Image 1 (cartoon, rainbow, N blue to C red):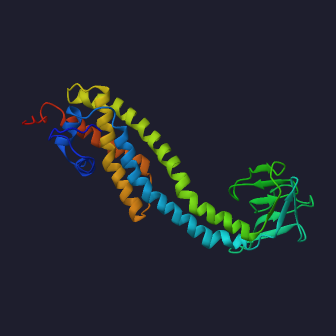
Image 2 (image 1 turned 60 degrees about the vertical axis):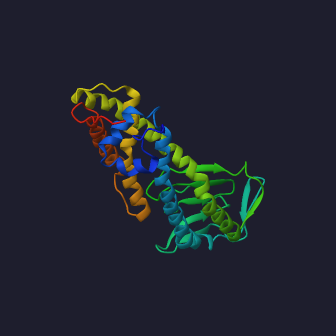
Image 3 (image 1 turned 30 degrees about the vertical axis):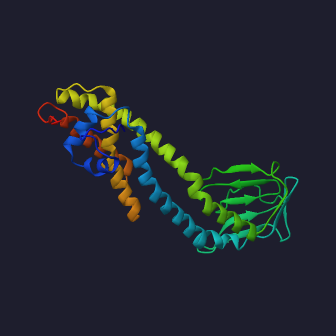
Amino acid sequence: MHVNKDSSTFTLFQTLYLSFFSRPLYQDIRRNWKGLCFPYLLVILMFYWVPEMMNMNTIISEFIADEALQYVDQVPMITISKGMASIREPVPFYIYDKKNNTPFAIIDTSGQIMSLDNTPAVVLLTRDRLIVRQDRDIKEARSLSLADMSDITITPKLIYNWLELFNNLFVVVFFPFALLISFTFHVVQALLLAWLGNSFAKYFNIQLDFKTLVRLSVVAFTPAIMLETAHAVLDIYYPYSSFFSFLITSGYLFYAVGCNSEKTFIPINK
C-alpha cells in the first residue's frame, strides 16, 4: 500500500473499517495507491490466522488431554532395533478405544495379523512395518517400513514428550505455512476478481487498468476477512466461509468500482 503526505491517503487501520462503507477510500485507492497491495493482503490475513492458530492449538491441547492420553497409557514398551519391532507382552497386543471398547491399535510381531482388514483398528504394528489408516470407515491404509528407523525404545513417557513438543511447536511451525497457503489462495482470487472487475467497469462505463482493479479487489477482501477474524476470535463456527467470503468480496468490488464512476467520483480539494 502506498503512503504519502496527501491528506486523501488512508492509514492501514483506517482502511480496516472504512473498507466497509467509505466511497472516498475506494476512490483514493484508484488515485494514490501503487502496486498490487499484496503486502496489505498479507497483513489482514495475519489478523485472521493469529486467533485461528490459537483455536487450533486449543483443540490439539484438548485432544491430547482428553483423547490421546487414553491410548498412550496402554502402550507397552516397544523396542525397534535394526528395523525390527518387539515387545515383552504376549502378542497380538491390543490398545483399546475405551469409550467404544473397540480395538484402536494392534501390535503383532508374530506374523499372525498382517493387515487391518476385518478389524476396526486404525493402527497395526508388525515386526517390520507400521500400517495406518486415517479412518475406520476407510479401508485403504498406508504402510511404512521400519527399516529406515534408528534404533529406539518407545515408552509412554517418550510419547508424552513427543505430544508435548508437538503441542508447543504447532503454532510456531504451522503458522507460516498456513499463512502462505492462505495468501496464495487469496492472491489467485484477487486476480480472478480483477478480471471480473472489468465487467463491473463496463457496467459503470469507466476505464480502470488491471492493477487498479487488483488493488480494489484486495481491499474489497477486508470486510470478508474481518468477518472471518471475528468468528475466529469468538471461536464461532463459520460454515462455507470461503464461499461466502468470495461472494461478499465480489459485492464490495462491485461497490468499489461503482464508487469510481463519474456519477460518484468526488473531487478532492487540495
